[in-house]
Length: 473
Image (cartoon, rainbow, N blue to C red; front, side, top):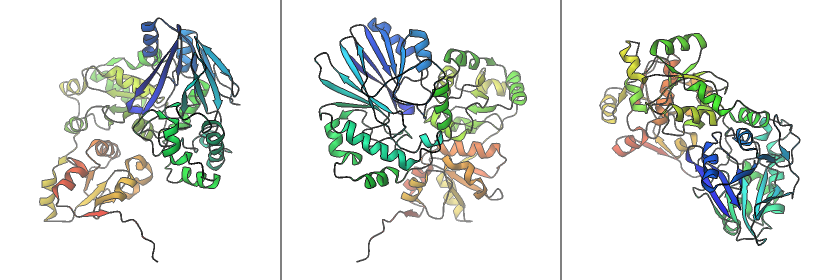
């Protein structure tokens, strides 16, 4: 028997390959399926089942393409949803033989109503591992407020109650030595306090995970699970529907996106289609010269989640600018979160655009030292685009917070007539923010080199820290 976790850091997502006696199972595959097929060729195995722990919100699964190419059966837990493809809707407790091992479906509603875990039972009948999807993470549990975005009557309170009973009646009675294999780790928006560890024993989770404490009442659980939840990214409901209804084959998405466009053709396509020009280069390289009105979201960061958060519609047409040779990577990572309408890329990148004498825009960066000199003459308007929790923890005194993830809700707070010094922690998010505002006509914007880290290290900026309130006796 082989159990292999296939972890993808940019989405903090774990898929699983399980093999026994020439038969294999893939659990929660990503959109691009070739790595799973290559893995089975290496072992000379055949994929028998594709298990989906639930209808994912944060990425588009590869279940449909994988089933079509391998003949595997797609399996979901109990659900009333009608899928746009052939799938086996299993019953609670239903078992599946794979070589000499067995996988038992355990219906665990709460994160979503169809959420299910898969219990791995070895050749000798011993329960060895639990593939928990988004029901149980290491250090956390799945947020119960996502399904209501698709089915309105499923309030987060109702789902949290379901989750409470699923954990206590279905998972906590299992043996302590069982290994927990979750679908996500730290950085995923599907939970709020996940560990960077991606596996653990169930016994250790019972001892340390706040949501598994046996003395916790239902009301206490609901309050704890719902406390501190921020609104999920806007693309989540759209990804859920794609996972339920179906989607364009990944091979077709790649073929369409890999059209190399000359500068003239690229410009014409942008003008004719209304496509967003997405520049995925490093932030500092982008600042030195970019196609006017393009948006910078660097590929070497939390690329897919930021695209999904900031671009409202997964059906939006896109034209991409990349570092040479990274076109396929960008198209793949866009497709993982449902952005299938990449129409092509700028052949030769920004160098070709400049060589063609096309218009270039710039974003000015300023050093902390320059800011300090300027502060001697006038008061500076500092814009902090980190998340509210980061800002609340510590920020430059008198800075204004407009979090990047809620940029559309707070644009009115940015006065166009003022000159703004924009920073995040180190520069990735601030350049995304600056590029979006630049495309919307904001001209008086400067990037702070090195971001908050550099400002703090200078020791010259007064800081405001969060002070925990004390109870007066």
